[in-house]
Image (cartoon, rainbow, N blue to C red; front, side, top):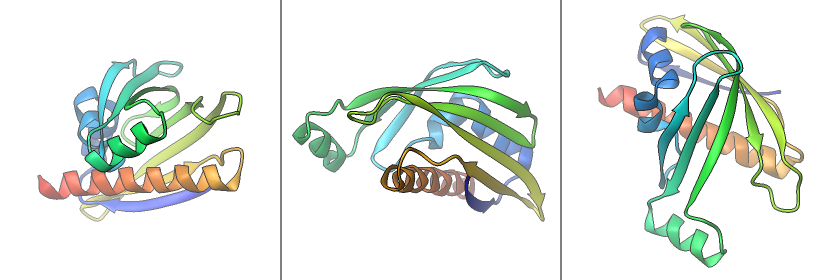
Length: 154
């Protein structure tokens, strides 16, 4: 497991809300240049989060089009553990790697009070190789940056 940490200037309850509701997720859960729309969220163990990510930045759109890739992709996560407001764990379906059979990857997020904010500790199971693991870590770090910016702007 690889670990990413951030301290977010909001209570664990606020971070939990942003991480577990369609409205919250749609406001920050996408890498730069994309937007996220939640198609379905069933917040319970074995419940699913299904969302669609769409490229909106012209550079991202151009890259995807030049490489024959779709501008929108649907992703699915299955919750494995939910302990409000301190832990969110889910398995992501990794079905977007060319020439690789789909598989699942575990992410565990712990939310701990830290002064007037929340320490977010994200443990990420590695993917099938170092290159894809680094891409995953960069994407998750970017998402946490977006969460941090959203909270700071409030």
